[in-house]
Image (tube, rainbow, N blue to C red; front, side, top):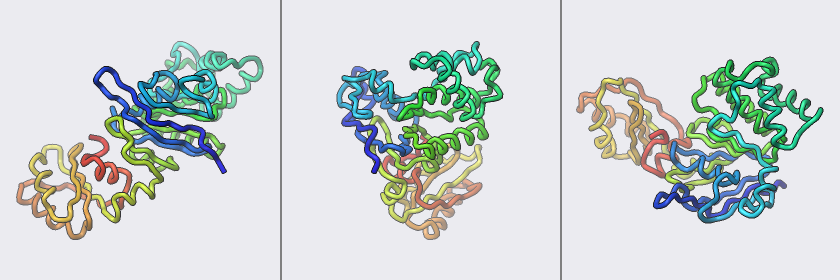
Length: 315
């Protein structure tokens, strides 16, 4: 039976009066993908930075592979790979030259380094661009090379911080498939994202983080049980429609448990969509606002976030 490769206990990070992380505790099993899911500014990157020994916690402790991040940082760094949100690449160098540099930083050399460069470039689908300068790469290719850097020394635990931000859908698909391949090879991954669908697709367990606090943790099934049998109504409006007054009206409709607005949408968590929908349509018509389309969804991680925080994940 797999044991915990990471244990974090009451991690805190403050900058003066600002509490960026407020006592986060969780563990990660060997071989699992664990996702920290939360909006921008929730504390995901700060948490990872402490676990990677880049930031000193204000309080709390964590162990990776049995080594303390505070007392044994070099032992921790030998076990982890890091794929930061900001690209850690030298654009004037080729893909191979970047990997030589980072491999040597990990203490690799000789034929072993050359062999590993071939392996990771194949793994991330960049073998044919090994000798191309990075400044000729697309955003998605740079992201994949960034992942290759983190994999160079075959880490026991890979940290991936928002690895699909700012890339096209095809590149995003490639990266998600790559993460699933890593799991099939036995890699342990801590994956942060603000995209609910990424966490749903990839993660064995999810920690939902908001305002520096871990507000829920478990498998997707365990988390969706928090909202019971409730459904989500996603109402889409035209950009020129004003929905400012609708939200308060919808909140008063019997059966609506939570409501939030984002990106010309209103998202409602409801007990029974078939009961609530006529009242929602009537309220919209009375306000003179036309609903363009309606999606009805079974409970998902976004409905959990809305239920716990009272707002949509992307607010």
